[in-house]
Structures are given as structure tokens and as C-alpha cells.
Length: 146
Image (cartoon, rainbow, N blue to C red):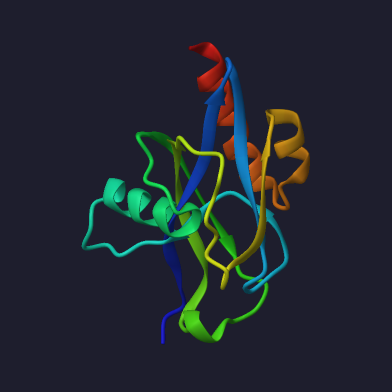
């Protein structure tokens, strides 16, 4: 069987509060342990925006009200083969940002054990993988221009 990349979306999720932007980072517990922003595999039958809405809702309990698509794509290899991802050697992703309203997040307890709202600097330091730091930087640069 041909090994392939699972299609996914990276969603840099944020809130604005008193002219400050805080980013949501989630503590991963399924497949690996560390900090990330919401992300997930997509079904190619649906639009990317529908997938971003669905994934944001699954991982935060909230529907995003402002979604932006970025011209940033990438891919990475899995550290090992996962039983629920047979035939995939890694993920290819496209970057989005999503603004949500509420500070309280309802986690998907199968995937994440905790969450934090952090300013850019602390979110950047907290993220486990360099590709997510790059994505955070892209989104933050756009949001700071507004």
C-alpha cells in the first residue's frame, strides 16, 4: 500500500481582550505529549472552511466567528505508525486562524488534557514543534498590522 500524508488544518486560535491578543494552546495527550494549537485531519468532501469550523468546535467547544486562510502549507512525518492512521506516514497541513469569543474552552478529553491562553511570546515558547511556531508567527504578524 502506498504511504501518504493525511490532509489536515492548523488553526491558530485567538481571542481579543482589551486590545490584547491571546492565543490558545492545548496540551496534547493522544499520540504524543506536548503543546499545540487546534489542528486536525480533514475530509476532502467538505470545504476547508467547514473543516476549520468543525475542528475548532471539536477542540474548543466554540464556533469561530472570524476565520482567515493563509497561503502557508507544510508537511511533517509521524514519529511512529498510529493504529487509527494506518497507511499515513505524516500529515500535510494548511494554515488558518480563527477568532473565538469565550475564554472558557471545552476540551476534547481524548486528545487534550489542559489549555492555556497566552500572549504571543509565551505561546511561541510553549509550542512543542517548530512548524507551529512558524505558523503562530505568520498569524501574529498579520494581526499586529491591523
